[in-house]
Image 1 (cartoon, rainbow, N blue to C red):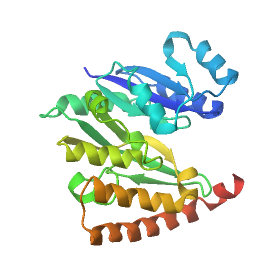
Image 2: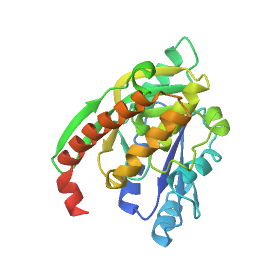
Image 3: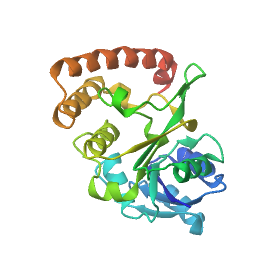
Image 4: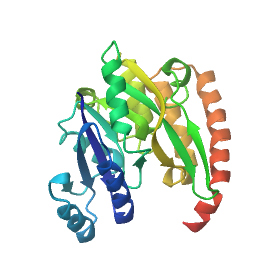
Length: 253
């Protein structure tokens, strides 16, 4: 059976960390470890992590942002596959890792990446929507085939190809694009694996949110300019929709 490493990155979010901890510890029927990288939040976070004892392996240290923290956490892992569930993220249910383990074991070809489905939650409106995983050949030209929290990476690939810190918002897109370009094979599991709350800092940095994918499409994927421009238009339309659904959340922040 495959051994999973669940990585959580946190900074000053004890409520979100506890929420994720409950979801991780509910997992049954799968072999996993939980790794937490805290960005130097202070005593509240470290005291809580200490109270968990052997249920978690953790470190608290300053980092250069979320993707630097993820890279550092990978070096602490012993699992075959890695999934990133950061503070506030949750699995869909307690059987998620078991479902992924079954899918990986049933695959005829050893998968480098598993792309799964995710439930998108819009806190401002109370609405939810299911996002199924998309075929790489149909989606990578524009964005990630699946939400980051519903993507499982073979750990050995992350040791060779880490997140690139020049993409602080779209590091997950860079990683998937780079791995696929380097020949990684994919497996798809069309079931909800994670719950993702739409919103946050990415949608407050719209120019950066548009330009980082443009650079990835140009420098990593080598896409012609008309595809890159089409992607910007598509991203603009989808972003406006997400902002409208989440607008009351933004007003609260």
